[in-house]
Length: 284
Image (cartoon, rainbow, N blue to C red; front, side, top):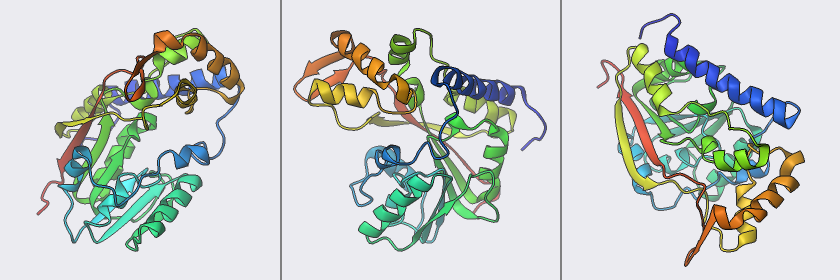
C-alpha cells in the first residue's frame, strides 16, 4: 500500500467532521462516553445460533475451521458470534463497554466458549493477528480511514472483509432529520468514498452486492411502534425526542404505508449490502 496523504482520505475526513459538527451544534453538547451502550447496544444483539441469511453466508464462505476471526468494531456480535461455530476463535475488538456486555451475555447464552471481547478502539489495540479480519458498518464513523484500513490489512494473515450498505444506516433517516431540524442532514461517507480511498491506497478489492435487503428491526405493527422505531438512534437528541415524535405523528400518512405486515416506512430508501474484500498478498 502507498503511504502519505491522499486526496480521497481528506474528503472522507471532511465528511466525518461535518457530521460531528452538525450533531454537536444541534444537540448542544458532546456525545456520552459510551454512546453505543445501554438500550442502543441491546438493539444490535442477535441470536448467534440463528440460521444464516444469504448476506452472512457470504461472509462465512471466507472462514475456515482453523481460522482466528477478528471483528473490528464488532459491537454485540451480530456478525462475529455466528462465525464462532465455523472457526477456531473469534476476537471482537470494540470500544463500547455496553456492547461488550451484550456480546459476552449473548455468547454465554449460546454456549460459545471460543469468543472473547477486547474493549479497545481498533486504532489503539496492539499485537492482534487474525486470519480473517471483518468490519461491519464501522467505516462510516472513522475519520482516519487510511490508518484504519492499513491496520486491518496489517492484522490479517489472509483476508479482509468490509461490510457496508449502499445507503449507510445513518443517512437513511435524512427525510426525518429534515422534518425535525429543518435543514439537510450531513451525510457520513459511504461505499463510493471508501472505494476511492482504497484505490488511492493501492488496494483493488472485490466488490460484491449481496441479495438480502436492509432490515432495521421488525416491521412495526402499530403506528405507535413505528414512531418509536423512527425516533431511535443517535440522529435525534434526547432534548428533541418529544418534538420529533409529535412531528412524525403529524406527518405519519406521508411517512408510512399500511400493509398486511404492518407499517412500511416510505422515508427509508432501498439499500443493499456490499462486501468489499481483498486477499492478503502472498496468502495461502
